[in-house]
Image 1 (cartoon, rainbow, N blue to C red):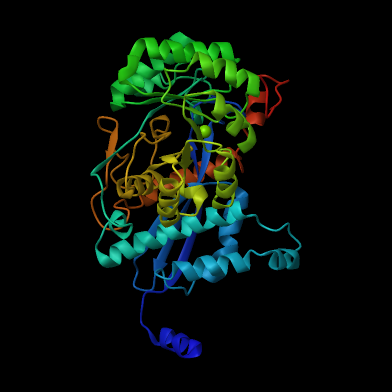
Image 2 (cartoon, rainbow, N blue to C red):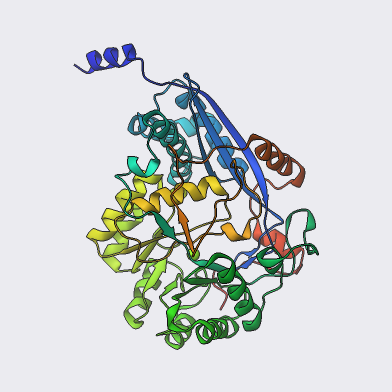
Length: 442
Ligand SMILES: [Mg+2]
């Protein structure tokens, strides 16, 4: 029976993936501060393009580094010749291909589950883009259909030094106006953060605000949140994310101080146990993209009660369909669901919007770094954020097409900038030579 099915399958004249193009790119990124250091003048992304025997192209974008590019390259033999509809089989083959045995044959360390989900998410989104084009349907329809036409995002504030990143590095573009000028300003205290929030909300209409913390001592960062609350009041939900750099006693002290002004507190402490302990003492909901980051970590999260909200990310949870599965799991176990982001361009944003439109509910505006980026790789330029939301792109598949000339330019940036993986700590040493990353600092 099994053989019979295989033979039947071989006779089928379905689409077959014939080409796979992996293009690392470097995008201009301002000097944004965080617990791990500071963003380099360029952030890395990898653009994947799959092309079928009928010439249908599907694209995706993932956080880039040379390891991931190599892992994608390593999947090539499985991808070429496969049917873009057969995603379950592809995932299964990838798991087997990346297993310990294969790794030891190559003499490498085994690839962990994280790399696998990352690679699969790139392949899945590109295949869904192809399937959408074949069916003349947007990806949101492949996820069960639209629950909303536009998807809300939050203003994502950062402590930052002055500068634009990219070729300007630590300098500013004197010609810039509006948000393009505001995004180059220094923000290292409550006044700077409130000014950044005003400029970003004015430019994009965001109705929720998140501040990335962990860069300065807790007193100063808490004062910034209090200043934002004074400026925006209860009408604008506020979130704060110190990236697990606080000791439990610090998180309790400042968590209590911010009680009542936060929509949620994101990763105040490190690890599921510490989060669970803190959660018992604070009324403010706790969110995470650090302590519960994979399906493997869900059982322990439920057992301990380590967070209220999971910030998913299709790049890290194994794609869009896996993220839909996560949403059901979150509903089952009483977790809220929202979305985490890294520096990204429009292909990732389009995928996030299709997913955001398909989710049963979006109780919290999603995170995006998009306003911090100035370039794009999609035809027609950057996707507009209007009233804090992004409309589901029109057209089949992702609804965005690769701008090959921009892709070439950004690939040349990658070759020229010399960065092969993200290293915020090394970048920070260019400003402060003695600086050392600490998992828990305050
Ligand atoms: Mg976070």
